Figure 1 (cartoon, rainbow over the protein chains, first blue to last red):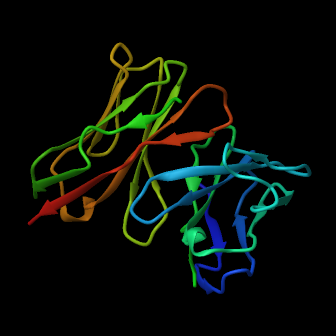
Figure 2: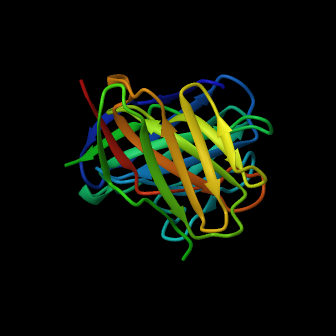
Figure 3: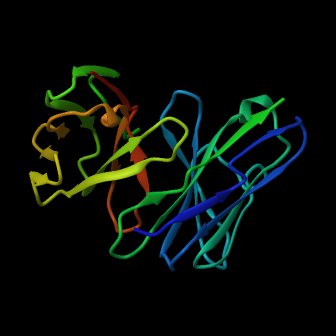
Length: 113
Length: 113
């Protein structure tokens, strides 16, 4: 499977600010996704990052709060906007290809104070 | 809505024993299932997958069983080792090849030496 690099690996941010998380895959993949994992809980899909077009968001997630870019097949960013303590979570990038299973990055651990 | 759930949130076993982690799913349209292992501070790691046209698949020390009649998935780990201690998630793809996954709640496996 390919390797996904996410950065930053962790951050502590002030409420009201925004953080952009980067995801880089070391090979071309068809699909890229962003998940959220709140402390002690399972993963919830935020959106599918579409190359060259607007992301597809899941119920409960909106573009204004979580803008996503995917300028090419190997790179995507997720921004967490106007953060509040409730946004404290692990954010995970995932990628999949036509013949490869969905694999994950190490995640970005975000704490909002 | 559709969901994936687990029977047991925690499982404690002795080193060398076999472990069985169970998962129930409710979406009969799901055609692809994956088990992930997540160690503390890391992203989910792919263990094994199975498609709906199969009822059993084996890997190295792991076996996944799929019972579509009762919508049940299990992960069997043979000769469990301390390094197997982690949270295990089942995930389902409810149709299509887009690898958009719905995750179960997770089971914490603790292996006692």
